[in-house]
Length: 88
Ligand SMILES: [Zn+2]
Image 1 (cartoon, rainbow, N blue to C red):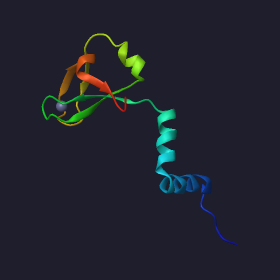
Image 2: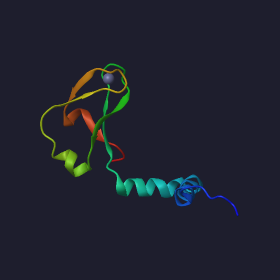
Image 3: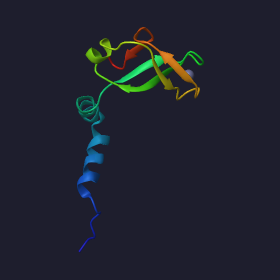
């Protein structure tokens, strides 16, 4: 009698993900919100602001926002004019 892994269903899902990453991306798009991105003024690299929202919510943003940059570790202040929504 073979001993089965504790969660064979989860393992199966991982295998499906590896076999068909486009399916995972599709699911992720439906379940998750796109990141709001800005260009880091210190390093000129694209960084996520930690905000996630849909494009129409982004369009309704008002005023400056602050976040701690994951690239240079400084606080950046940004407005809608500096930012864009991932994959939008
Ligand atoms: Zn930065």
